[in-house]
View 1 (cartoon, chains in turn red, brown):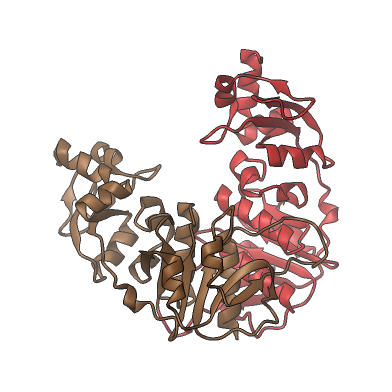
View 2: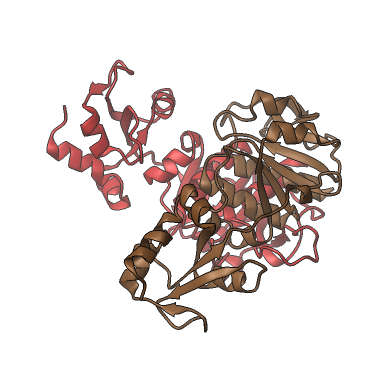
Length: 240
Length: 240
């Protein structure tokens, strides 16, 4: 059983303000919570409607429905302490780092974190107005990758200006990515869903790239979804 | 102004049953409706809260909110006749064709249609239990690509068994896609979000491929989102 005040606290974790105030986020589902138990993250409490985890507290299905952020509530929900990652760990001179400039859609962000994990990218540096990676929709879309990829928030243009390495970004006037020279290290900047990379951030890009449509002269879709473009670019960097 | 019966009819287009009964689907937003006006699709009526299109009928914002399928209603909504595409147009011996085996998530399907358009794939052949491409969420996620890509529904295993061409699919035991030989034509089969390609469909796959994680020996995410995997594969086919 949980008290009404506890239910309100957990529900408040759906917003960034609530997460910052309580220093925690929520994760749902047996698989994800199981992975968190085996990770370095600290779990504050596990609530469950079935006896799944030994330390889990039993609650009713009605209570679970009230605290769940999913359309169809799962049988386990964990309240997890927000991890604090040092931005100094993002070292684009040693490994590829992704940089996100105002990516707004939680589903896109979650998908990008998941594919970064697949392609061996450990750090994502985001502009402060990028969607929050501990938004429940993002956490679920990462399918556990949020436990392995460090997501940082900072003044992106300023951080980029201090990186003494290749900074790649996609632009309509960029070089064909399939024939461009790509290094094994550096930063790959991806922009907002509608507006792309902001002028301030673009100033720091040293290598402009383009994913060419096929065939090159046809006039179909004007752009790719940002998560799709990120995947094509990461695949191309890792293939070589 | 629209009548209550008309509102109910339009709302019924949110379901597959309703769309099939009335032979129509809905599209929202000035950009998308504008593209449909310039396409070969037939528009039954345009409803708008501002004078945007000359043939548009004015309705109130309250009425628009009632018929809209978006979280935030737009100022234009069109009722469009369902196009009928002949499956005979899907010719994998002449151009790459995508095949989807039980892709369930509307967002994934919409994103796949959009990227197919980008990579010059004109036909997508789906199993009958794949999400419906005229679901409003799919239509919006395609960003207009639904007007250019033909999406077919059929018994997928049976259709594949009749194609006398290369049939590619991704499997854990597949060949590294970056070094595999890839033809300019054939079928690329993508599977369900959780279960992958069904046994019945897999029987028809002649070339098993794998997108390798990076680095190959690490143990991170177990899989890629289906739309992301489709993008990486299409990019790799088109790059060559």
